[in-house]
Image (cartoon, rainbow, N blue to C red; front, side, top):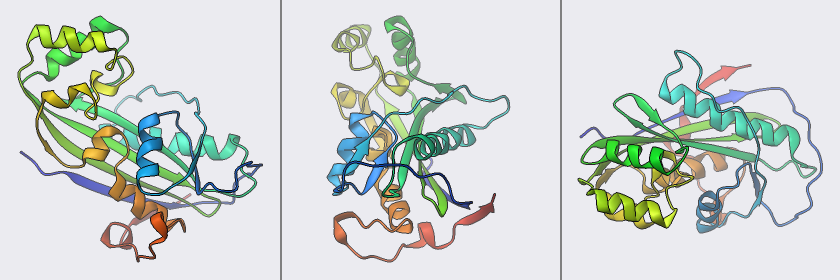
Amino acid sequence: MHGASSTTTLITGPELLVMNVDSKSAHIILASASPRRRELLQQIGINAIVQAVDIDETKKPDESVNQYVERLALEKAQCGFDTISNDDSLPVLGSDTIVEIGGEVLGKPENRQHAKEMLLQLSAQQHEVHTSVAIVTREKHVIATSSSHVQFKKLEMSEIENYLATGEADDKAGAYAIQGVAAQFVKNINGSFSGVMGLPLYETVELLKQCGVTPLGIENKPDELSATPSAIKQ
């Protein structure tokens, strides 16, 4: 089994439009309605104003999986920064998670039958889960990607049917939630559990520190993840 990987890119850009924010206790704005991401941020002591954004999530021709997931995360963060009231100039965080198996991207299922097909595809196989995190501020854009390998056990049809009946698979990439009932399907994970959930906390903390936000008030210097990022100027 291949090990997990993590990449980060720093993009500096021009000052962007900033508008109003009502909460004075927030550290960041989360451009996502995902309760899992909100809970993971709370786990590390980050208060977030939650605001979903709407972007076109269609994969572009010849776009690699990593390019795809990173673009979606950055577009969500950028859309949030441009449209959400933000008079306090809070950093805006966007994230996206993609399940990949054999080079095929498994998004959210269209219906229960589609979810069943996905789970049959994952049964007794190893797949990859890629989650990108992007943060946009007035001064910079930063982005990191966590990739993990997940091995499923062989799923019986009755297990799939019972799982689908819970409704947990309906809005999940790859048709499962590792933090829920589907945890029993996972034989092995090599990588970031929080990344498979939808927000890799290690990468997220390193990016937050680059943007002046210190989870739990711990004043740490960014380690090698953020020490040598590649820079792309706009």
